[in-house]
Length: 614
Image (tube, rainbow, N blue to C red):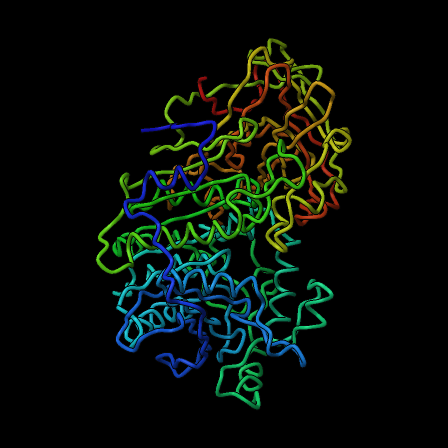
């Protein structure tokens, strides 16, 4: 089965075709929830703050499955007087939804964060991963739990959910990570080896504020006015325990400091004793596969590299999987297809997204349900422009072929190779060029809607190649791969490549992007650590190779995946930049490289597009 499609089908309807258990019916007897909080002591004496959300009423003989979420962004907030009695209706509605569907919810501040004790030695440190399994085992042993555990989360909490499977916790039955990274180095810290400066800096500043029990600077005015800090546990009435925990956070490893010394994947971060790989889900492949737990992973075409993370997980792990990629920002609060009308409601709506989570767990956690998947491994994806959901069991989907578009004289893009004996296009690096602050990388910070806008003006400062109007509509589904034959006057530099659509009126839409630091250009012949649909760059020190100024060098690398239908009469464009000033750290800024992109019989440059036959 592949490339199933329907014009009218919703994600909920498509998902239902691959899950055995029907969605659970709400329990009319459950009228509310009871929330309790306490400390749970880990093997080394560190105490973690835990919230337990129980259905109300809950007869003492009833045992329920539990869904665990472990976060570093405060499991719950403490409001200032006179609002301290108030519970935010948004999470309360979620609590009640899961309670009525027969689940206990567990929320935990990971060590060194929130109201938990301990020191946080950077994201997903080994001791934090060990905590995940220990908390799961503790939950399974509680009198209100039937011994079946699921793990769920978005972003950082999505990674903790996925990594619980690596701990071998015997009670774990299924995990649902959303919008998280599969490879921290390439997906969020150094995409293409280029430091993602804006995210690293702002994420570190936000975490430092949270860990000091302060409302972050990027919070809304009402959050700063109402929120006192993280919620203490119930027994901590004078907040003395919270104050003691926050004092221990003072020696946490800050994100920007941690990565300051990084260039290569195998570098050791400052203040820690490990590479970033140790904290990445792919690094724990053997343990996650041994656990055998089903995975339901969500990502967004417009959300950093989370769609790529979903695909690489799907191709790498042998676990049963229900993978989903939609036209979403980080967290799926906005539709971000460049063809969608501004303000279009997200589908599924947020309440329906939580119902989808409950439906998935019904198959593996509910008493007397032995369910699972009708198809053990399926990827559901949305084709932008066509605005349709589809399904496939293979990636790229069956029926995909590679179509090569060559760079040609006159800034053109064509399906035929250049015939000129010589030819190149010169470009002087402009370090002020940008994709703005509403791009796929900034949504990771505040879950804003991704909107690149009309790129026509920005492209006039870049090196571009544009095709003739398409004679027929074209579907691009998969990973584009660009190959540049280039000279540079500098020994290093960043290469940003944007795949765009130009409509009949000249409006330019961003479709996808990719980047590579020239130092990491070597395509490795070693086995990659996970399934790699694009050329494998190891980013390891042994493969580092500075450019030789003036020498023609090949750079071949993948762009982030996409699924898009481009209409007849529109044109494709490849745009090349050396910087994205509002997002990435500059490379070779003070050398201001002058590039020459070759496009001739001897040295030609091109982009390979994965085309779905229509």
